[in-house]
Image (tube, rainbow, N blue to C red; front, top):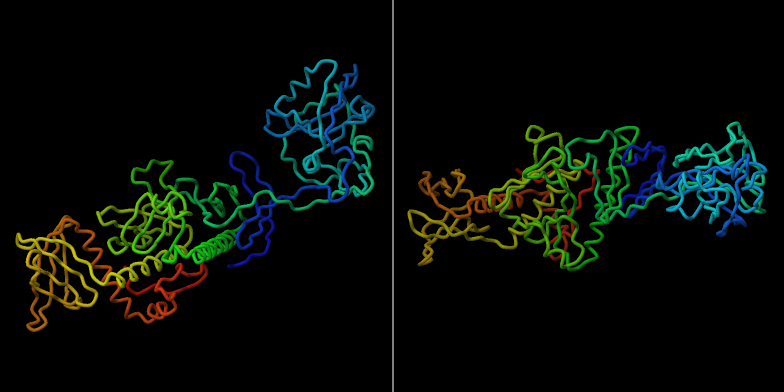
Length: 508
């Protein structure tokens, strides 16, 4: 697996209308850690950290003498942000800046405003509150003016309610508001905000369901749905670098997971793609799918298969030598999505998929070629029922012998040709195929017209056998076969996201 060092200066754009804020990314082999800066207590334990119930009475001048931030209306904790000097809150000796008011669901600014002459609060000091309260970073909690604060921006919305009823109040933090405690020390540190497990996670540069690509930004979505949010990068190069690093680690984890599971030894490929909807609407053109090439089949899932039972619950499955895969060139693309490929099924249905990176497209292409070759090599021949001149026949495509046509009743061979003798073919797109073979002796062209009930499956099978024949002549491909596992199956297609491995020559 590829390991990446921690990088700084990245932005995490929250979903919705929230402002971006600085975060740090750390990529390890199996997890992406997103960190934010916070001010935390690194030594000692405040004597006021335990839960306390405090009753205070309103003063004629000054009210309760405290200010708060947050509240149920903001869906965030209510925290005491200011204690006024020589007012009731301070004089109680039991309320401090950074105390969270625990009854969040019952508390709001309006409740305190209309609390009457007396209010009872259950509070407990919250260690993470200094960051958004902008507390000074001093080892012994000695108070300094507010303009010397840490400068860490506040994710909370100030309620604006200063409960001392004094419009000209300019109190700052007093020593009694934040009492000294021997050995207590605060530091600004990077703390974990989100942990994204990378096994079977997916990347997305596009706005959900659309073909609109974000500028220098992407999301990481874990298999359990945990999302990184939109990670915004300063340059396209930085964005691509992180995308490739993440894709490489995800691919390595998938390969490692498959190799450790003996029951899945025949898996050639597993990975996320986006499928173009057949009846798409403007806001939902694509949906995420998970593709797997295992043995003779291509499986399409809505979520990665984890158990043996999951493999029986695929949305669809196709026989690899009876489908056709085509990498879409720039002039073949259906919309703004890049790195796309199409799959034509045995029924003639066209499916379109896209991946995030060009290297992922190369991985898929090589994996599909490998899966097709291995399956042709395994079965050696395939027979299809057909009709020729109103007679029921059978056409066998044989890896060694070529094309063999025989009478379905008597099994008598009517004709046979080698692959090299096929000089051309055409079909009507419905059921009929016209083959043009060259007679080995006379060199004349002989036409054979056959009718099939499964035209596309036959066409794709013939293509797969030809492709496998050509692949056997490719020294690069033959060498890669020599490096396969003893059982004949590589555990997973192994192209790095940064490699420039040549494409197999039989690709179309």
